[in-house]
Length: 634
Ligand code: WAQ
Ligand code: MG
Image (cartoon, rainbow, N blue to C red; front, side, top):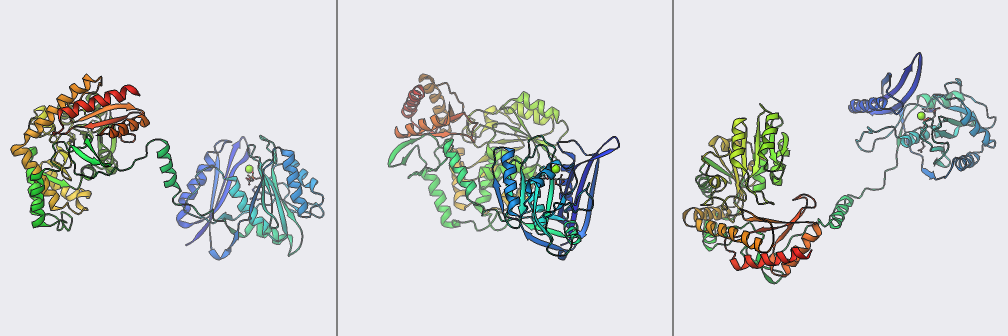
């Protein structure tokens, strides 16, 4: 690939006077020209001294065989506490180079008027050899070999640029060494460099705020002429290979991150349960009351559901063998979708592999970068991720605050978009103000989407969810839900108009590119839905009875949490305390999760109790009493 030499010089015009304020040079590949030029321009325009009035960019094509590659001089840093000490250190190095009258060299450097280039000083006679003594000799056409494609958009990197220059200069014919002090008033580190001892940084070679500075190339005639030296400095193209930084440790970030999570009490582990998802489970060789599961109606281990699922497994097998659009749609899959549409009272339905996968797939298919999505601040992570993936503009409104929502919608009137909310908020257990949300969506011609993960099977007389709860005939455009909570199985779904479902089948990537769920899983959801619809809305009644009863229990034990849903958040605040209470409850025989950041806001850690239809009133009484006790103790 072609190489180009790229040079930038920037100056300011004060009256007739033009002062140099910034300069840099690079050797770049042709495909890097735009970025590198931008970076140099940015540098020229953001100098601490002020903006440039004049910027000169020069670009010259160069051939690879014109370039010599040099290894960077080895670097050593000498820490000094004050300038005098620094100058002594510099003198020591100059002596090593055989410059006997070294003090005069430093004087020369610190007393010379500012120059664009460097002096060339004969170390035996201490005469200056450079032809133009007001300008000096500039070393140019040099850069470092890039190690990765990173471009330095930051300000000048003094050290790197100086090391490149020093490496080139140290290899010049007749040059035995160099001393440099920056003329930047805020840069006091300078160096002495030579092939003999490498690049020695000295941390203080001048006082902070001083405009003094310059470079001296130390000359000793050994090969060729002064002309050869100057030609090399001014014309030879040099790329400097920096020593590879010590091998990066690819695991470091992961190790640190785990360590940090532990320190913040945010480290998570899985807990192994040795039995089915029932109101009681076997955990750590102990029977404990399960009060954290979303198996609200106890269908997950229901004998009738299992029997049906197993019989379908006998016929249709375990794996589905393909994605839905290839070979993964069986009669079982279609039956479940028809049943879901009937259950939710919509034209059609579509099953996804999980609720998460459904939300991500639906939202990213429906919305793109020209859309606006209005999203409740407490929406589930899967909704948030779907919004992000869509690349739409995301407008977050205050939790369940329809006034805030309408204000924000009004600010975007005329935009195409979507309002999306959980029906029941997963960590707070409260219910969306759906009638109002739908009015706003209709008025502004926005799509409405509701996630019924925690309302299906929980809300409404017959467990049909949020619309039944509010007695609404009009439905959200997109009614999403899961099969894995009240229905006890696995998967996510969406219900809506036929054209919506057709669209999602064609556009929702998480639907298209997943192997479809097992027929066994599909069958379990069919069985659970059948029970729910035909005979067992009595499970819903039992659950709702428990919800009412538990509200009374909590009140009796001095806990303020109230809920109309199966989710009861008991806010503790501190992450560590929440973890502690959760662990103590487990010892007492109650399995209740502590929910922490990032699932909920930092400092709002909580116990999240989830009720089931088959919890007994005795259990509910006992656990409320235990929690009341523990909360009082902290
Ligand atoms: N060729 C010859 N001389 C130059 C060149 C060049 N390309 N560029 C600058 N000079 C001379 C000129 O007289 C300046 O006034 C003087 O050097 C200082 O230049 O390891 O920033 O660009 O951290 O101010 C040393 C870094 C920083 C030490 C050097 O030099 C470290 C620096 P500046
Ligand atoms: Mg400078």
